[in-house]
Length: 192
Image (cartoon, rainbow, N blue to C red; front, side, top):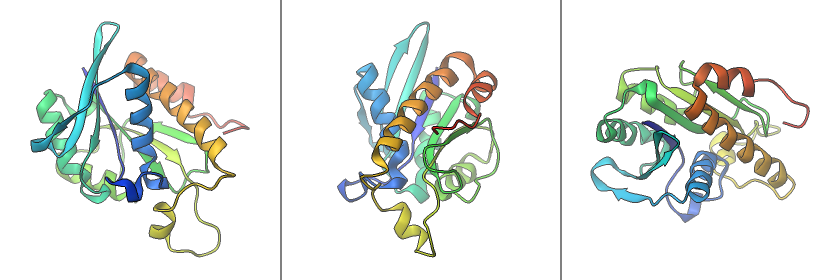
């Protein structure tokens, strides 16, 4: 069994925000595989599972705010009896150009507070993360305001392509492991 967790903030107010791109990827997987999500009150999330081939994939979205994601992820790993190595976290990344994705097997938070919360809760950096580029704001607007804003109409087509690419990446990680997936998806492309 493996677990994919999408990060975001709960509630309608944040549903379309750049920060919730991780939720959008997990919701697309839920839709494609017809996974029934259930509220995990003790784990502060919603999750469900599906059998794909010979393996089981669990999908989850924390019901905590982004900066407190660690407690939910720790509870999910305990619930499913998994190690950090069985986890892929999907989140936004300001330092990647809009539309670009990057998957890594471990590492620091890179300044992402949701990832920092997970590292602190698990006491480990040893989990995979898929970062989806939302780009940095032009000029000097407030970063918090930017990540909580919606994508513009002009950006939506590029975001849809990025989500499709992220879905393929998630499934490659699940089926083929992190190394092969990195080799396939971490290349820069002209239409990223």
